[in-house]
Length: 222
Image 1 (cartoon, one colour):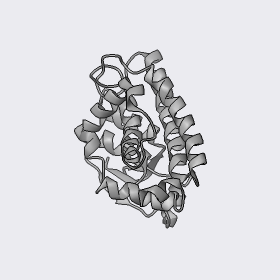
Image 2 (cartoon, rainbow, N blue to C red):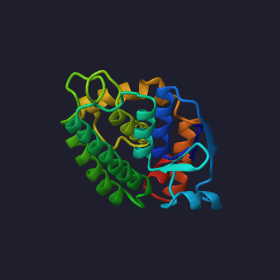
Image 3 (cartoon, one colour):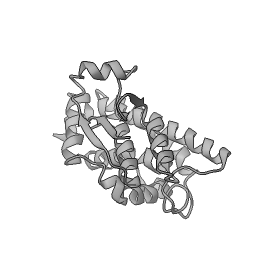
Image 4 (cartoon, helix red, strand yellow):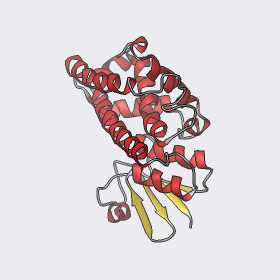
């Protein structure tokens, strides 16, 4: 059955699915949409009006990036989730937590002023401190040397953190030694690099100018 990914370039959740598709070497087509002008057919197949969507065959459409990634992993016997039921459940929780971190990070971009930015930043860093305690002490990935859907889930966040850090050093890397090592290894993955559709510096600037127009990050980005 053919696979069609429906997405837009700046979406971190769509990037997750691109990483998995690339990692597993699955053949697929891509349909790029404008998030500001969603086509009527998309609203008919997406009950929450969100992307990514994965069309499987002619009639089945999957939504929610976590569900899509698990389906692709099972379809290709990719080994991106552990066999142990308890560990598997733990990973699913961490993937859900990645989504929360990503949404909090989006709040940094949208912060109207420095006070709001600092308040949101403190919440993001609190989450990252908790995550730091869970990362494998030796690494290089979240849990040893094998890429998992946990690594995939955090890759888009790490990429956006890296670009925001280039605008304003909103955290101290030395406070997060395990996380920093993990981030660097994840972003070096070929499947992660191939998941970026175009110049991400320009994409990030576009997001800031859109979601955070006139806000703190926009004002210091120039």
